[in-house]
Length: 330
Image 1 (cartoon, one colour):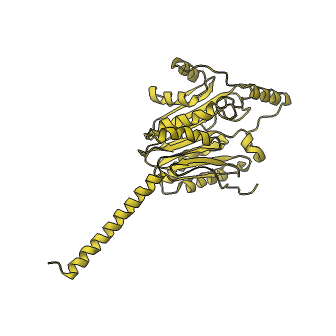
Image 2: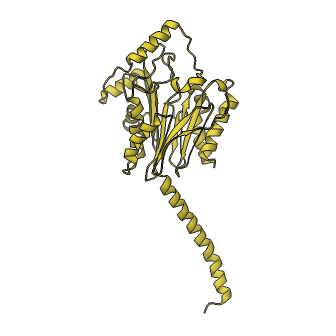
Image 3: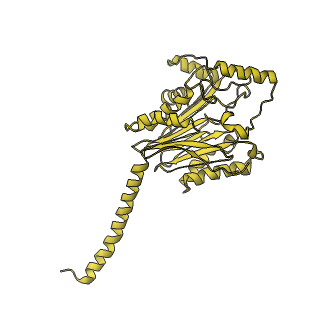
Protein backbone atom coordinates (compact mmCIF):
# COMPACT_ATOMS: atom_id res chain seq x y z
CA UNK A 1 0.00 0.00 0.00
CA UNK A 2 1.27 3.49 -0.85
CA UNK A 3 2.05 5.68 2.07
CA UNK A 4 1.24 9.37 2.08
CA UNK A 5 4.96 10.08 1.66
CA UNK A 6 5.29 7.87 -1.42
CA UNK A 7 2.15 9.43 -2.92
CA UNK A 8 3.65 12.93 -2.54
CA UNK A 9 6.90 11.75 -4.15
CA UNK A 10 5.04 10.31 -7.13
CA UNK A 11 2.94 13.44 -7.45
CA UNK A 12 6.07 15.59 -7.43
CA UNK A 13 7.36 13.64 -10.44
CA UNK A 14 3.98 13.55 -12.20
CA UNK A 15 3.12 17.26 -12.00
CA UNK A 16 6.20 18.53 -13.91
CA UNK A 17 5.58 15.82 -16.51
CA UNK A 18 1.99 17.03 -16.95
CA UNK A 19 3.22 20.63 -17.17
CA UNK A 20 5.72 19.73 -19.90
CA UNK A 21 3.05 17.78 -21.79
CA UNK A 22 0.65 20.72 -21.56
CA UNK A 23 3.40 23.08 -22.75
CA UNK A 24 4.13 20.90 -25.77
CA UNK A 25 0.41 20.59 -26.48
CA UNK A 26 0.00 24.39 -26.29
CA UNK A 27 2.84 24.89 -28.73
CA UNK A 28 1.29 22.38 -31.12
CA UNK A 29 -2.06 24.18 -30.93
CA UNK A 30 -0.36 27.53 -31.51
CA UNK A 31 1.58 26.18 -34.48
CA UNK A 32 -1.61 24.71 -35.96
CA UNK A 33 -3.17 28.16 -35.92
CA UNK A 34 -0.13 29.85 -37.49
CA UNK A 35 0.59 27.31 -40.23
CA UNK A 36 0.18 27.44 -43.15
CA UNK A 37 1.20 31.07 -43.53
CA UNK A 38 2.38 33.29 -46.37
CA UNK A 39 3.88 36.78 -46.21
CA UNK A 40 5.07 39.03 -49.00
CA UNK A 41 6.37 42.56 -49.50
CA UNK A 42 4.23 45.60 -50.36
CA UNK A 43 0.55 45.88 -51.19
CA UNK A 44 0.81 43.89 -54.41
CA UNK A 45 1.56 41.03 -52.03
CA UNK A 46 -2.17 40.79 -51.27
CA UNK A 47 -3.20 39.27 -54.64
CA UNK A 48 0.06 37.34 -54.73
CA UNK A 49 -0.74 35.79 -51.35
CA UNK A 50 -4.19 34.77 -52.58
CA UNK A 51 -2.63 32.81 -55.43
CA UNK A 52 -0.17 31.17 -53.04
CA UNK A 53 -2.97 30.36 -50.61
CA UNK A 54 -4.88 28.37 -53.20
CA UNK A 55 -2.02 25.87 -53.05
CA UNK A 56 -1.32 26.07 -49.32
CA UNK A 57 -4.93 25.53 -48.23
CA UNK A 58 -5.02 22.26 -50.18
CA UNK A 59 -1.93 20.97 -48.40
CA UNK A 60 0.39 21.81 -51.28
CA UNK A 61 4.12 22.45 -51.24
CA UNK A 62 5.31 25.90 -50.22
CA UNK A 63 7.68 26.00 -53.21
CA UNK A 64 4.73 25.70 -55.59
CA UNK A 65 2.92 28.35 -53.55
CA UNK A 66 5.64 31.01 -53.67
CA UNK A 67 6.20 30.48 -57.38
CA UNK A 68 2.49 30.81 -58.14
CA UNK A 69 2.23 33.81 -55.83
CA UNK A 70 4.95 35.99 -57.32
CA UNK A 71 3.87 35.13 -60.86
CA UNK A 72 0.84 37.36 -60.21
CA UNK A 73 2.73 40.69 -60.06
CA UNK A 74 5.16 39.41 -62.72
CA UNK A 75 2.23 39.33 -65.17
CA UNK A 76 0.53 42.55 -63.98
CA UNK A 77 1.46 45.58 -66.13
CA UNK A 78 0.23 47.90 -63.37
CA UNK A 79 3.03 46.71 -61.09
CA UNK A 80 5.82 48.76 -62.62
CA UNK A 81 8.66 47.23 -60.64
CA UNK A 82 8.15 43.54 -61.37
CA UNK A 83 8.07 41.62 -64.66
CA UNK A 84 5.82 42.71 -67.52
CA UNK A 85 5.31 46.47 -67.42
CA UNK A 86 8.42 47.05 -65.30
CA UNK A 87 10.34 50.32 -65.59
CA UNK A 88 13.06 49.90 -68.24
CA UNK A 89 16.74 50.55 -67.79
CA UNK A 90 18.71 53.50 -69.21
CA UNK A 91 18.74 51.81 -72.62
CA UNK A 92 14.98 51.28 -72.68
CA UNK A 93 15.26 47.56 -71.96
CA UNK A 94 13.22 45.71 -69.31
CA UNK A 95 15.67 43.36 -67.59
CA UNK A 96 14.54 41.01 -64.85
CA UNK A 97 16.10 39.29 -61.83
CA UNK A 98 14.60 36.49 -59.73
CA UNK A 99 15.47 33.66 -57.39
CA UNK A 100 13.73 30.85 -55.54
CA UNK A 101 14.75 28.61 -52.62
CA UNK A 102 13.19 25.64 -50.82
CA UNK A 103 13.37 24.07 -47.36
CA UNK A 104 16.24 21.78 -48.38
CA UNK A 105 18.49 24.69 -49.35
CA UNK A 106 18.10 24.14 -53.08
CA UNK A 107 18.20 27.41 -55.01
CA UNK A 108 17.86 28.78 -58.52
CA UNK A 109 18.39 32.26 -59.90
CA UNK A 110 18.35 34.31 -63.09
CA UNK A 111 19.77 37.78 -63.64
CA UNK A 112 19.66 40.36 -66.42
CA UNK A 113 17.00 38.33 -68.22
CA UNK A 114 15.08 39.96 -71.09
CA UNK A 115 11.87 39.02 -72.92
CA UNK A 116 10.59 36.40 -70.45
CA UNK A 117 7.48 37.33 -68.47
CA UNK A 118 8.04 34.88 -65.60
CA UNK A 119 11.68 34.86 -64.52
CA UNK A 120 10.73 33.11 -61.27
CA UNK A 121 9.75 30.01 -63.20
CA UNK A 122 13.02 30.08 -65.15
CA UNK A 123 14.87 30.36 -61.82
CA UNK A 124 13.03 27.31 -60.52
CA UNK A 125 13.98 25.36 -63.62
CA UNK A 126 17.63 26.34 -63.14
CA UNK A 127 17.36 24.89 -59.64
CA UNK A 128 15.66 21.69 -60.73
CA UNK A 129 17.40 20.59 -63.94
CA UNK A 130 20.88 22.14 -63.90
CA UNK A 131 23.88 21.72 -61.57
CA UNK A 132 24.03 25.52 -61.25
CA UNK A 133 22.40 28.16 -59.07
CA UNK A 134 22.50 31.21 -61.36
CA UNK A 135 22.21 31.89 -65.09
CA UNK A 136 22.50 35.39 -66.53
CA UNK A 137 21.75 37.47 -69.60
CA UNK A 138 21.81 35.77 -72.99
CA UNK A 139 22.62 32.44 -71.36
CA UNK A 140 19.54 32.62 -69.15
CA UNK A 141 17.38 33.61 -72.14
CA UNK A 142 18.71 30.76 -74.27
CA UNK A 143 18.08 28.31 -71.43
CA UNK A 144 14.52 29.57 -71.04
CA UNK A 145 13.73 29.30 -74.75
CA UNK A 146 15.23 25.81 -74.96
CA UNK A 147 12.87 24.75 -72.16
CA UNK A 148 9.62 25.96 -73.61
CA UNK A 149 9.39 29.59 -72.48
CA UNK A 150 8.21 32.10 -75.08
CA UNK A 151 9.47 35.59 -75.76
CA UNK A 152 7.25 38.53 -74.80
CA UNK A 153 7.64 42.26 -75.28
CA UNK A 154 7.84 43.39 -71.66
CA UNK A 155 7.99 47.12 -72.40
CA UNK A 156 4.45 48.50 -72.25
CA UNK A 157 3.47 51.69 -74.11
CA UNK A 158 3.11 53.46 -70.76
CA UNK A 159 6.64 52.59 -69.66
CA UNK A 160 8.06 53.32 -73.11
CA UNK A 161 6.60 56.82 -72.86
CA UNK A 162 8.07 57.22 -69.37
CA UNK A 163 11.50 56.14 -70.63
CA UNK A 164 11.38 58.58 -73.56
CA UNK A 165 10.40 61.38 -71.19
CA UNK A 166 13.22 60.46 -68.82
CA UNK A 167 15.71 60.34 -71.68
CA UNK A 168 14.56 63.70 -73.10
CA UNK A 169 14.92 65.38 -69.74
CA UNK A 170 18.40 63.88 -69.47
CA UNK A 171 17.98 63.06 -65.82
CA UNK A 172 21.00 61.54 -64.16
CA UNK A 173 20.46 58.05 -62.83
CA UNK A 174 20.21 57.89 -59.05
CA UNK A 175 19.64 54.95 -56.75
CA UNK A 176 18.36 57.26 -54.01
CA UNK A 177 14.68 56.99 -53.23
CA UNK A 178 11.97 59.55 -53.59
CA UNK A 179 11.01 59.29 -49.93
CA UNK A 180 7.76 61.24 -50.27
CA UNK A 181 6.55 59.07 -53.14
CA UNK A 182 8.23 55.73 -52.62
CA UNK A 183 5.17 53.60 -53.45
CA UNK A 184 5.22 55.02 -56.97
CA UNK A 185 9.01 55.00 -57.21
CA UNK A 186 11.21 52.07 -58.16
CA UNK A 187 11.75 49.97 -55.06
CA UNK A 188 8.83 47.60 -55.03
CA UNK A 189 10.42 44.19 -55.47
CA UNK A 190 8.12 41.39 -54.38
CA UNK A 191 9.61 38.87 -51.99
CA UNK A 192 7.48 36.05 -50.60
CA UNK A 193 7.92 33.45 -47.85
CA UNK A 194 5.53 30.58 -47.13
CA UNK A 195 5.25 27.64 -44.76
CA UNK A 196 2.96 24.80 -45.79
CA UNK A 197 0.94 22.45 -43.59
CA UNK A 198 3.88 20.01 -43.52
CA UNK A 199 6.14 22.71 -42.06
CA UNK A 200 8.20 23.19 -45.24
CA UNK A 201 9.35 26.77 -45.85
CA UNK A 202 10.20 28.26 -49.24
CA UNK A 203 10.87 31.73 -50.62
CA UNK A 204 10.83 33.63 -53.89
CA UNK A 205 11.96 37.06 -54.99
CA UNK A 206 11.45 38.76 -58.36
CA UNK A 207 11.96 42.27 -59.74
CA UNK A 208 12.60 44.50 -62.73
CA UNK A 209 15.04 46.43 -60.58
CA UNK A 210 15.62 50.14 -60.23
CA UNK A 211 13.97 52.27 -62.87
CA UNK A 212 16.36 53.63 -65.54
CA UNK A 213 19.26 51.73 -63.98
CA UNK A 214 22.51 51.36 -65.91
CA UNK A 215 22.22 48.64 -68.53
CA UNK A 216 23.56 45.44 -67.00
CA UNK A 217 22.90 46.36 -63.38
CA UNK A 218 21.86 43.46 -61.14
CA UNK A 219 20.47 44.06 -57.67
CA UNK A 220 20.14 41.96 -54.55
CA UNK A 221 16.92 40.17 -55.53
CA UNK A 222 18.47 37.20 -57.39
CA UNK A 223 21.39 36.81 -54.99
CA UNK A 224 21.05 34.01 -52.46
CA UNK A 225 21.82 35.44 -49.03
CA UNK A 226 21.12 39.01 -50.06
CA UNK A 227 17.60 39.32 -51.49
CA UNK A 228 16.47 35.90 -50.23
CA UNK A 229 17.65 33.19 -47.88
CA UNK A 230 15.87 30.12 -46.52
CA UNK A 231 17.04 27.52 -44.01
CA UNK A 232 14.49 24.78 -43.47
CA UNK A 233 15.61 24.28 -39.86
CA UNK A 234 15.24 27.96 -38.93
CA UNK A 235 13.15 30.06 -41.31
CA UNK A 236 13.55 32.53 -44.14
CA UNK A 237 13.95 36.20 -45.00
CA UNK A 238 13.57 38.44 -48.03
CA UNK A 239 14.59 42.03 -48.71
CA UNK A 240 13.25 44.87 -50.81
CA UNK A 241 14.51 48.36 -51.55
CA UNK A 242 17.95 49.63 -52.53
CA UNK A 243 19.66 46.38 -53.39
CA UNK A 244 23.19 47.69 -53.16
CA UNK A 245 22.78 48.22 -49.42
CA UNK A 246 21.41 44.71 -48.96
CA UNK A 247 24.23 43.16 -51.00
CA UNK A 248 26.87 44.94 -48.94
CA UNK A 249 25.50 43.42 -45.73
CA UNK A 250 24.07 40.08 -46.99
CA UNK A 251 20.85 41.14 -45.30
CA UNK A 252 18.62 38.09 -45.70
CA UNK A 253 21.30 35.64 -44.63
CA UNK A 254 22.01 37.85 -41.63
CA UNK A 255 18.35 37.84 -40.60
CA UNK A 256 18.13 34.04 -40.73
CA UNK A 257 21.36 33.62 -38.76
CA UNK A 258 20.09 36.02 -36.10
CA UNK A 259 16.90 33.97 -35.82
CA UNK A 260 19.03 30.82 -35.54
CA UNK A 261 20.73 32.44 -32.55
CA UNK A 262 17.47 33.15 -30.77
CA UNK A 263 16.17 36.48 -32.03
CA UNK A 264 12.55 36.85 -33.06
CA UNK A 265 11.82 37.68 -36.71
CA UNK A 266 11.16 41.33 -35.83
CA UNK A 267 14.32 41.58 -33.75
CA UNK A 268 16.38 39.97 -36.49
CA UNK A 269 15.02 42.30 -39.17
CA UNK A 270 15.64 45.34 -36.98
CA UNK A 271 19.23 44.24 -36.38
CA UNK A 272 19.75 43.85 -40.15
CA UNK A 273 18.50 47.43 -40.64
CA UNK A 274 20.76 48.57 -37.80
CA UNK A 275 23.70 46.90 -39.53
CA UNK A 276 23.00 48.88 -42.70
CA UNK A 277 22.70 52.12 -40.72
CA UNK A 278 26.04 51.37 -39.06
CA UNK A 279 27.88 50.36 -42.23
CA UNK A 280 26.43 52.54 -45.02
CA UNK A 281 27.14 56.30 -44.67
CA UNK A 282 24.13 57.57 -46.69
CA UNK A 283 21.61 54.92 -45.62
CA UNK A 284 19.08 57.63 -44.74
CA UNK A 285 18.71 58.41 -48.45
CA UNK A 286 17.52 54.87 -49.18
CA UNK A 287 14.73 52.49 -48.34
CA UNK A 288 15.29 48.86 -47.38
CA UNK A 289 12.68 46.57 -45.90
CA UNK A 290 13.06 43.05 -44.55
CA UNK A 291 10.40 40.47 -43.78
CA UNK A 292 11.14 37.22 -41.98
CA UNK A 293 9.33 34.00 -41.14
CA UNK A 294 10.39 31.41 -38.56
CA UNK A 295 9.71 27.73 -39.00
CA UNK A 296 7.02 27.87 -36.30
CA UNK A 297 5.03 30.46 -38.27
CA UNK A 298 6.15 33.54 -36.33
CA UNK A 299 6.76 36.51 -38.63
CA UNK A 300 8.23 40.00 -38.38
CA UNK A 301 9.63 42.94 -40.29
CA UNK A 302 11.65 46.14 -40.14
CA UNK A 303 12.63 48.92 -42.55
CA UNK A 304 14.67 52.11 -42.81
CA UNK A 305 12.03 54.62 -43.89
CA UNK A 306 8.34 54.93 -43.01
CA UNK A 307 6.01 53.71 -45.74
CA UNK A 308 6.95 50.04 -46.04
CA UNK A 309 4.32 47.34 -45.55
CA UNK A 310 3.85 43.63 -46.09
CA UNK A 311 0.92 41.34 -46.83
CA UNK A 312 -0.01 38.47 -44.51
CA UNK A 313 -2.37 35.53 -44.96
CA UNK A 314 -3.11 32.71 -42.51
CA UNK A 315 -6.13 30.57 -41.65
CA UNK A 316 -7.20 33.32 -39.28
CA UNK A 317 -6.53 36.57 -41.14
CA UNK A 318 -5.67 38.42 -44.32
CA UNK A 319 -4.19 41.87 -43.92
CA UNK A 320 -1.63 44.48 -44.91
CA UNK A 321 0.77 45.32 -42.09
CA UNK A 322 2.42 48.73 -41.80
CA UNK A 323 5.98 48.38 -40.54
CA UNK A 324 7.59 50.51 -37.89
CA UNK A 325 10.61 52.23 -39.41
CA UNK A 326 14.15 52.65 -38.11
CA UNK A 327 13.79 56.34 -39.01
CA UNK A 328 10.41 56.97 -37.43
CA UNK A 329 10.19 60.56 -38.68
CA UNK A 330 11.38 61.98 -41.97
